[in-house]
Image (cartoon, rainbow over all chains, first blue to last red; front, side, top):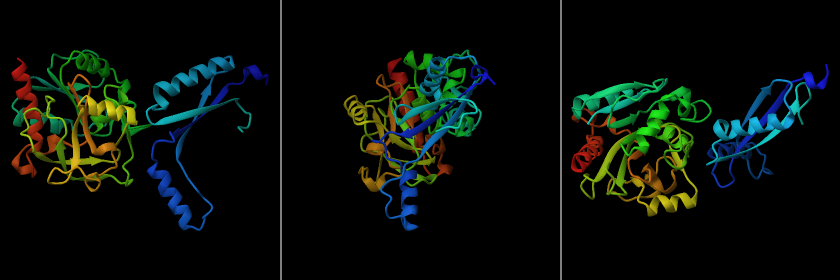
Length: 94
Length: 232
């Protein structure tokens, strides 16, 4: 199938800002420590979204829309930050 | 004073709020459905507790896009009182009507118990008529009540006397031990800069009659009613 007929997949990784305490991450870190993984120095939890877009859009348009979705709904900028990975459908994500 | 209680899918303290306004405060009250774009004529809006939209994504995050929020914003911007309780507070934060955000409780557990609150700013309509030195005993019931804001916002909240209630011990001392959920500065309730929008995690509607074990919630509503009547 030609590339332009393939849709887009945007992966959104949302994490708490470094300045925000993450009680869940701390609990996970403690659990891993108690399992003997003493080399672990930190663990933080986040959210992962996988957004599917129609074919026929330019990559910059997909990114623009995805960022707007993040800013309006998916991410709370008071406590969270995010980054995106954009790929054509069917391509293995990095 | 006419009250409106906003009902979102997943609100579960809406009937409690409705009942105390009607039966304890003896004021007219109406339910306002989340899909309603046109706001009925009310003087005070209550955004009740619960789990609007299942708490999906973040607490209050989806409710903020309800059609009724346009009316809530208009009401708030006109200077009329709005009280967001628990999930209602979370919605006001997500909607940007109050500053800050909620995190999971420090303990990672749902906390359902009575707490003590000291009045941090006695100038607000919600606290003005609470006698000074009063320590309120009001229950909390939440999993995400760990209030967060950055240091600059906290200084602004302090400078403008927007912090209304803080978790304290029974003597009114604000201590780390009295902080149930890890909230910044023991914050239990704040208002907007104009002072007409209050958000608080504790549930005043759950302690308004002798049978409920405390009547301290009534003091907040009475203060509001007295403030409004003074202004009028």
